[in-house]
Length: 189
Image (cartoon, rainbow, N blue to C red; front, side, top):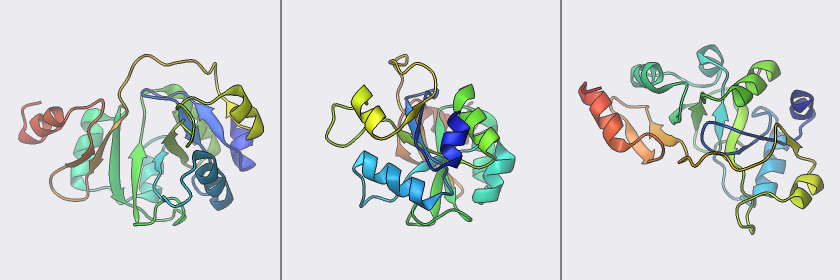
């Protein structure tokens, strides 16, 4: 049911290995705009995507040698890797880069795999709320919920790393610490 909802341009609420996420078909411009309005981020143009595997990732990003090493060490897992993008609508990211995720949770991976395209990966919060989505918001926006919408185990968001150069640049520290990445790059891990 969730994949049909995505194919029809709908929004899906799904659990990940970090936080609950809101997803739409990352190739559907009208679905991306609907998500942007829901989140209250009409001006911002930057969402990450969930890909089912590296074959799908290579269809949408230029994988660098650094990204290859990070992928082998940390994915599937709590890392978002920023790379040059291609083949994605500019409504998804206005600067020709995109963050890719391959979470270690089966739901988003299955959604992307069955859809055959990436889905957006953005936290399930809406501007002007306390951060949680109420039944009213879910109903009013026709959001399809995958599983039981309940708090996940306490988890930090994914760490976001720009991997376009020779060394990683941490954009946001999350579940994977900067020191873990530094140790990895220096060969300690």
